[in-house]
Length: 259
Image (cartoon, rainbow, N blue to C red; front, side, top):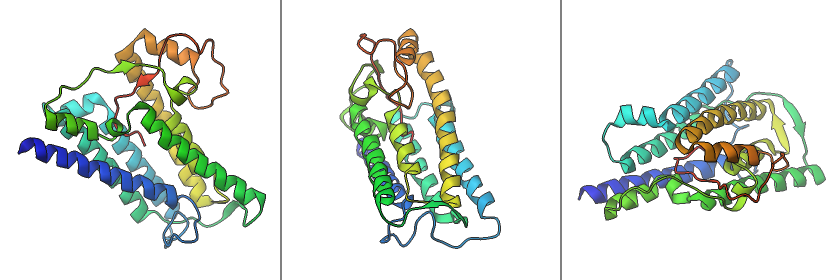
């Protein structure tokens, strides 16, 4: 019975993550059919302060709970399936809180109402999110969001060792999920100051998060990942690489959602 409950919990967390991230994709773009997005809502006198606080709270939850040391102290000997599902569920909840209390900030940096500018940025936005989505399957989509851990617990399968291999986009970028996410966040035909605040804040969060994540990967994978860092750029595919054809591989990143 316990195994079914744990798997059900992992499935619930996965669905919550899927819904919250899908909403994010639509929320950051000025789709006319969206009654509620990043630029729609009631703005108060301290909108920017509230929005910055929400980004900081999301980043704090995401970064702290992603650290193995923090999870071990918080959960102790709790099965990995429960730890990972809890992280995924809390991340989804943090996003919902951000959506609920976000306040638009007046003013516009740029606005393309029609023409090639609007269509070009819309295509770039769609390409960025599609790139990030495909990249989740090039590692292990269900592992990333904790569902495979729940399935292994249900079937009594031991947790696998973290491996290091080269595949798909990871031949050219160390972090294609985050690269696609950044494109999806920044590519908008209407860049309000509120959207700019969100894009800048999330960019800083992603860069800081990747710094600490790569420190952890070097610690756990050693010289192999250090070599990979030298060969493959972090976020931009046109970065210099000494030898992409070496046998050093990318990480089958057994990490939980770094949205």
